[in-house]
Length: 257
Image 1 (cartoon, one colour):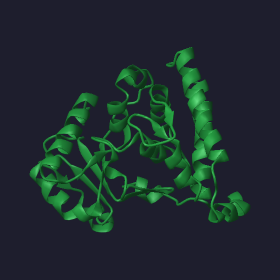
Image 2 (tube, helix red, strand yellow):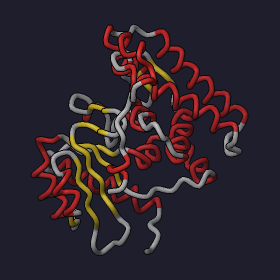
Image 3 (cartoon, one colour):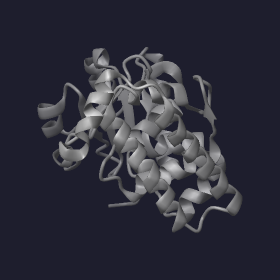
Image 4 (cartoon, one colour):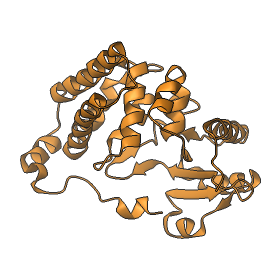
């Protein structure tokens, strides 16, 4: 299969987003493409760490499910029928028959992997991607996190700072606290993975000493906020059980799609 360049994925992702907007269909990019669009000054870091883009990930609203199917057919894509049959209400995978390797993965309302990241009220807070705060939750929710997600998170935290409110190009600590302060399992996974980010950074040569300090400072800032933020009764009760019971959803079957 011919390798698709990162620039092709970026251009196609933006083409789809813009075309959808003309039809009043709100789509937003997730994943590696969102990282690239938000971190233009750090592209060299992703290249140094050998982090290519492999597909296009979008978030949409379930009420546009049927309209999106018609739209992607007009854009030249064909659906993965097996995924459509079993997961079509909350996930689609589409491929372009004339451009092998060009795959579109669309999620509706929420990301449902190890934990649930809800976009029903947050999809249109940014454009053409979801917010950086939601990208962070997307990356940090995977219990068996892989190197790609660690690299993406380090680059994002290298280029973007923290805020106490919803502001462009920042991580919104208040939203993180509102989500994770009510869900001990999700909180535990995110704090665990932020620690893994720090460990992974130790073995990466791509970042300068100043960039390392910025990343570590921001990780520590997020962790401090998550440890000190108010916790719900539900969170406190679940904390007492801890890891004696599984605190996340298995996602192996989903990843095999």
